[in-house]
Image 1 (cartoon, helix red, strand yellow):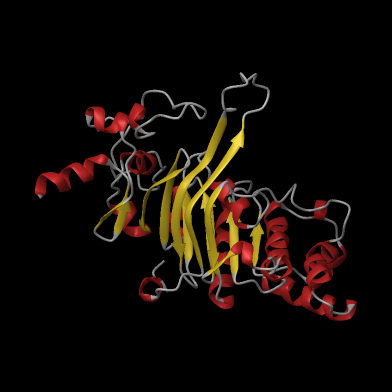
Image 2 (cartoon, one colour):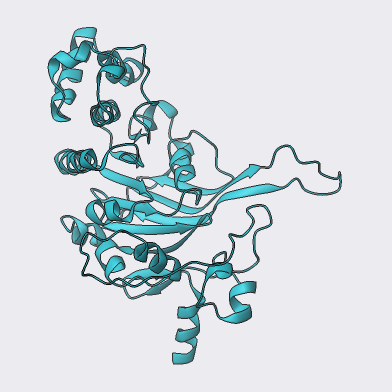
Length: 338
């Protein structure tokens, strides 16, 4: 995947940018003394990244690291605790809701629960047109049939119900619904995780074709690094609510920098049995989400930690070549070189 990468890197105007984005959730069912602050879980912790026009940006990490929370923040399903979300250079909250919502659309993880089982798919796909346009029912039907054709659904499917379709077909319906308003930006939250492996490739190729045809910018969220390698141009790796490494996907896979990225890639199944990627076994315990560590969140599982600096100081993203990585290993090396 190198189609638009050079042009996107040279473009200084991202379509989407988030700055110091954080999201806290209160811990419920816990008795708190009156003079103490109630406990919170920081699901997203001061995350920064940019997505360029016509680019597929991947967000990877284990379940629970904050990926889907970022997606929900972007579409306005929940309100951020702090930070900024900019769309085309303008703060998201400065857009009227009816103006911004058609521009950002989302495909959800599970095609079995994201579609109303009591409604025909023609009505499901046309719902955004009913809300955001004044098209007549006849013109809405024409738009629906056109987008159905684009995603590979036959015209006679329009009167059927979701239970009459396979998982892959249901995800095509969800994609059609997301694209019916011709958005600028598409969020794909684990769009293939509920599908069989044989169907995943079909859906991924469909996404790539539609992205190129419609000039879409995409945020692709997954825990499966093999999918990320196939579809995304730039990848950011998240751990414990923070981004620990970001850069060109091919470069990251060939030489991962952060110890967590190295462990993730080493744990990815390889189709070539003769290729030795080495094993990076993670030991130790995950830190508490409520009592967050003062230093690096990965220090308790990292075999490369550098004593007290990792335990007491949280690393910030720093540039290493064309990538950014949050790890004291590289800040220490840079200090020694100076």
